[in-house]
Image 1 (spheres, rainbow, N blue to C red):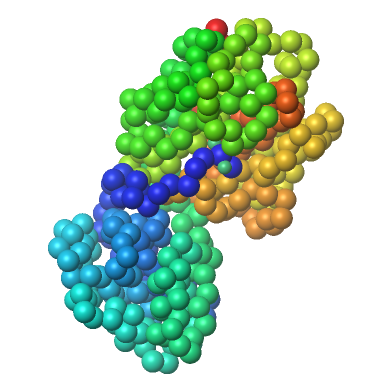
Image 2 (cartoon, rainbow, N blue to C red):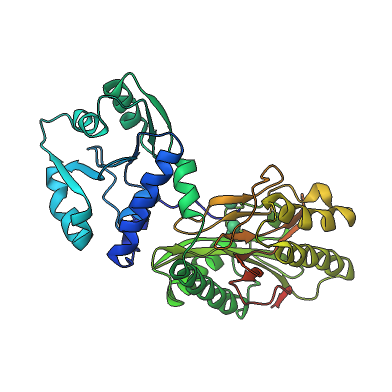
Length: 386
Ligand code: ZN
Ligand code: ZN
Ligand code: ZN
């Protein structure tokens, strides 16, 4: 569950498109999924969903750009006239699969959406991250209408990755492993967390990410805070250091955590770390098609609880990953949905002792027909550093 929300602007720089047929198929499947859910249309503004369906990201502006995917009929793209040249060049041959509806500065784009959705529409889904100003103006213009979240429909598509997407995630995971190997090969003691964090960003880029998204460096007592912001604390002997790093490569995200230790850990720390390592391995091993997401969470949690540290593991075991660092499916006790082949997610239990130390291990795992496969290949052992 660790990683910061990606800004949509950073997403655009990193998209490397698949073949146009991939997006035609995604648009077709989105329309079918909308119909199955009793929706008349999906309204998708610039966002990861937009990038998923069209293979590029329009600039998120105060002027409305909105992909309209009716359950029946051809999709349209409503956009400011000045954005049309960019859209045409980015869409390329995919332009033929869409009607581009350019609006002029004095037009009302919400009325254009209403014309496309149709007068009889009753139920329309809006993209989950759509700006409130667009949602409110669409609601006013489309009235009377029921607006619902497009999330469930889009997630149903996005959570099952194609083999091309899995290869991108594997490449991102490999790059994160390389960055992790590089930083744990360096001396950490005597350096501040902030300095090590900046160094990790360099390693992430050098290893092939186009964007270095985050590099949590949490040392000593700071490691007990799962989302610690790296600061001016100087790393020293006897510190456990949680390194949670990630970025994006060709549009797909990496997110991996290892725990380093400066010097020799005590027998007590080593025993506690061994519990965490077993819990993480058990959760990875629990992954299989048809297994509820909650069961993977339970596999990690039981081992930690049995060792007496149940209260020290206070976050979910993992999150889906793809175009976004955090997406569905979530590995949490409340999620009884079965895993499917093509789901990709983190497995990242942690143990956190307020005021003294913390540790976490995180890998990206893909659910295949025959079970879970880790995309990260780095050892989950404690990384002993100077
Ligand atoms: Zn994570
Ligand atoms: Zn998080
Ligand atoms: Zn993470």
